[in-house]
Length: 238
Ligand code: 13P
Image (cartoon, rainbow, N blue to C red):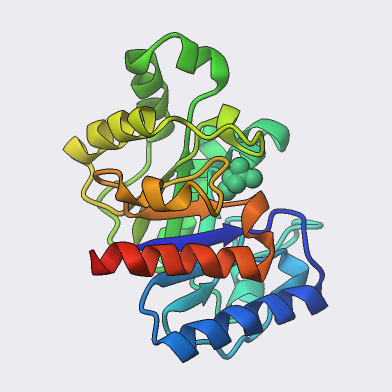
């Protein structure tokens, strides 16, 4: 089970440090072995001394080690903080920041060369969902074009665009169907993301083929995030 928090553009350096400390204390005190991921803003990255089940990763990077790319962050800068997990293909980067499929493939290949864990995000917009499950899957498969699905450190996050930040999670049946279809050809951990909260996380983790969640809004308090880690722990013990 993987419980991941994407901070997006939230938290300061100071509050990130406090958040991670609280989560780390909880994990250590309870001997939790749930795989935990936290993706703070780039300005809050640091060398955190955490339990080995917690990885602090990067939400974004430019596919270069270093160079002249004003405003961007390369792997030299990420390595300074021991970052070995990155998000690629998040819908906000695809749609708001206009990252093209070819840039995503470059980022993917670069991160793969660096040997880091990649959480690759896919998901359909509302109009595609309304066209039915075959349209949804066709859309998602296109997002995998050029992506090496055999990469050993790959994790997939299925995040329907219309469910992100809207408070409207996909139904458990919808999630189940997409994960089932992905599972036919993908042997990697499959996460769900989109309006996951403390109340629905248990049921979502129960869905067949669901290996965890990638959470935004509700995970931004350590208390709620810890509750989600507890839910994953309970799920493992079932
Ligand atoms: P919300 O949990 O706010 O819907 O965001 C999900 C997400 O985008 C995680 O990457």
